Amino acid sequence: MKKLLIANRGEIAVRIIRTAREMGIATVAVVSEADRFAYVAEIADEIVVIGPPPAGRSYLNHEAVLHAAAESGADAVHPGYGFLSENAEFARKVIDAGLIWVGPSPESIELMGDKSRARKAAHDAGVPTLPGTQSALNDSDDVPSIAAQIGYPLVVKASAGGGGKGIRLVETPESLMSTIEIAKAEALAAFNSSEVYLEKFITHARHVEVQILGDGVDFVHLGDRDCSMQRQQQKIVEEAPAPDLPDDVRKRIRDTSVELVRSAGYLGVGTIEFLYDPATQEAAFIEMNTRIQVEHTVTEAITGIDLIREQLRIASGEKLGMSQKDIVFTGHALEFRINAEDPANNFMPSPGTIDVLTLPGGLGVRSDFGIIAGKSVTPYYDSLLGKIIVWAPTRTTAIRRAERALKETDIRGIKTTTGLLQTLVSLPDFEHVKHHTKYIETGVDLTGGAK
Image 1 (cartoon, rainbow, N blue to C red):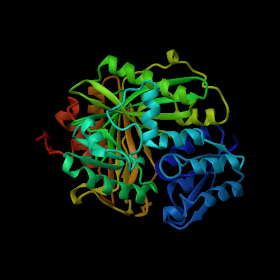
Image 2 (tube, rainbow, N blue to C red):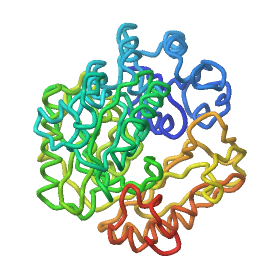
Image 3 (cartoon, rainbow, N blue to C red):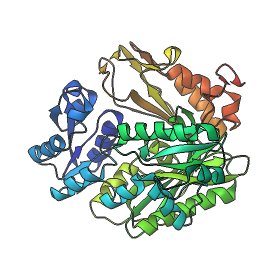
């Protein structure tokens, strides 16, 4: 691998460029017309403008990205997360063009991208799964009877869904069929597939996940994470390792995650996601993401392993080069996503020019941002500005360090979620691991804990 094209933008594009530069790999950033003067355009070795601001005409345009790769002489493509990162068709086009695809095979992307097929693959590999349908619903199914066997409440999920989208809660039998029809319409509009399946809903569930890494032959896990602090299925705070998880549950999700990717001959990094029920102390598979995650940084903090470097190594044909016993977990890490949104105004996006951007420093503090002071936040894309990551020997110390780091963070000119994050990390419920995936939506008092 000599020259890497990054088919993404923002903080993840900056993140990839930094590791590539350390490895002696030249970088090409594709940018829309709106991002022509973005920070990533300043630090990449080359840029190629691939289209107008709408993502469908730029970052999601297969032919424009492939043309940029040919024009720049790139020999590899890294998709980051979001956009084309889990698009099997695009992955095939990259490979067919004779380029290195930094990711798993298109077949793995297709298998795990279909959530109902992924559930079955997980079940067959011995991964604990929630009660639910083993395949997408079809017209011949006795849906009310199936739902009654699963039990209420339950969720309708889009088979092609992801990123917290395509999910509808059903609390009573009376609303089942109408909710399924709504979910199908939403799924068709969002994912071009109306297939849905049913799954048991866990009240007050925590979201835990396992980071895996493989070269197609050998496989390891890099520990677990907790991503339970969410707003409308979008993660806000993540940490590693997952706190307050029984040892047997932790071992089971780690070991079975490795078996799942071994059964698929998986290549590269991936994340196996679970719901953990504190009431029963059981965890169950929900999906697999076949890409680098936003929250990969907390895993890097507790392992010392650069996951982007591992992606690039494995994509280049190198062997894994580590066994499970080589991986040592040290301390505790937290990540905070800072978005250009106004929490006081229903989290409305807040585009505009950043006048001041002061990021925290000190022992155990890392800032991954895709923007600098003087640059503009456009209204066209995801609102994530960057992430603040803290590490400390214990979770309690990490929380105190996070409080300090967030207070040092000063972003002016636009509204951000920094203040909300300061409140969340200071809540007793967070420190004592009483939060869950619906914590913010179900009556949280952001001045002092759950109501």
